[in-house]
Length: 114
Image 1 (cartoon, one colour):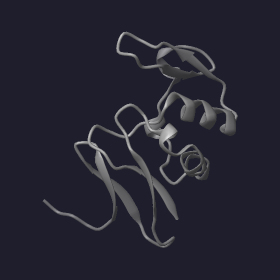
Image 2 (image 1 turned 180 degrees about the horizontal axis):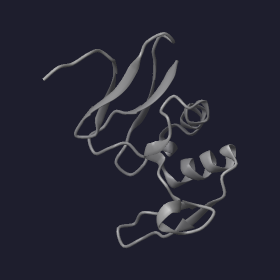
Image 3 (image 1 turned 45 degrees about the vertical axis):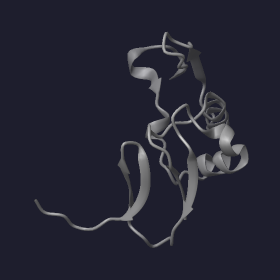
């Protein structure tokens, strides 16, 4: 199984180009707003509104469309603070994305008590 992670401090994110391509491939009608005062473009599904915001962080990291876009675009898929990488793990692993200051890795899920 292929999974997209961020391998740089700062945080996971897709470029505007990658978000547009994802929306197109998934049949989403993404509406753009921006760039805002911070230089970011916001994306919304169908119309601009509080409940229609599209977040690239909510895309499943093993989504085949996401993986294919990152493979094809390479560094052009990287968001402002990200360096995306595809990690391949066995299909039968119950996994999760772990991160520290935005730097991510894949870990096998296990039980934890505190």
